[in-house]
Amino acid sequence: MKVITYLINLEGSDQRLASATAQLQQADWAFSRFPAYDGRGKALSEFENYDDAAAQKILGRSLISSELGCYLSHYGCAKKFLETDADYLVVLEDDIQVLPNFKQNLNSLISYLDQHKELEWYVVNLAAKKKKLAKDIVQIDGYTIWHAYYFPIRGVGLVWSRAGAEAFVELGKTMQVPVDIFFQSWLSKNGKGLGVWQPFVQPAGIDSDILGTVATQGIQRKALENRSASHGFKKQKRMWRDRFYAIRNLLS
Image (cartoon, rainbow, N blue to C red; front, side, top):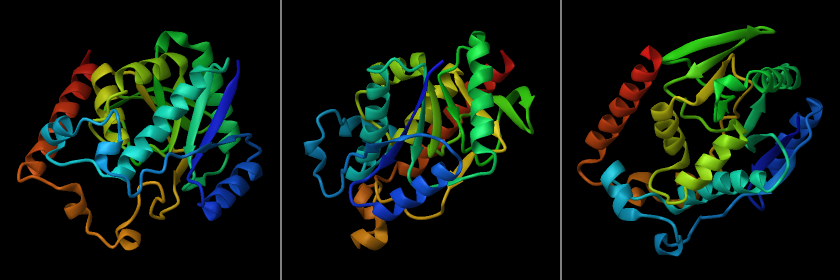
């Protein structure tokens, strides 16, 4: 069983890299830096696989360039993973707080999943804020592995199976929504997402350099997103659709 870890880090975000590196070294967890795609300041027309018409239809707004950069970073991690002989991939964003017993918990999680291939999972979310529409699988060493039928939105810590990465690379090539929304909708529909509780990592609470911030850009996010009048309705529609899928999988 071979496990590799990529830490997504934007060029120039040295403080974040230093913080994440120190925490992972303290936890005795090996990783490789994955250079994040810097989408800041790029025109939407520069993104070859972005479908703005689909984004407007689904979200009621355009994606912003930094969201596309974040999407491409996660997509790139999955593609690179598939070029290796590793069995599992851990993807961490650099704005993380590594929680106690990280190595012990992550090793026991992956070991359990490797021994229970009948679960046929795609992605494990390591940073869930809460359990919602979930079904417990097993408790190990003080944490629980569960079917995350309503997949948590936070993507700062993920574990991929090869089957999951292959499906993401195939189905996720065209960008229509932010990557965390893609994960939530996709995994709520197919029921192949898992979670852990308590989480192994959490956001450090600092605005992401990859996504950009209102403070650094000097632009209100609403204006940047070019929201239509239907944005709020489409958001609620999408959330209820994903909950419907989650409930269907939970009850099946």
